[in-house]
Image (cartoon, rainbow, N blue to C red; front, top):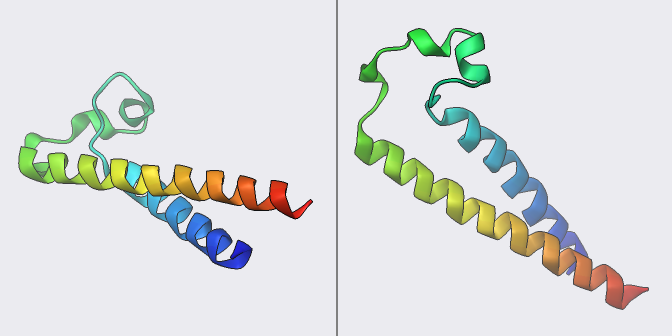
Length: 78
């Protein structure tokens, strides 16, 4: 069970990194410093952004749940 939870944690962590990097910069942050502010509005539609937000939140909930499960498994194992 610990191995399966660890694998879920690793996969969701990698997915979180990829999904967060796919988000369009909102301005005023690090994305503007590295040239993200010059992009046009042709990058994606609002439907795609909303779906990306939903997917990121769902993966984030799975990520958090896997951390909690691992914590409980290690606490019960000791």
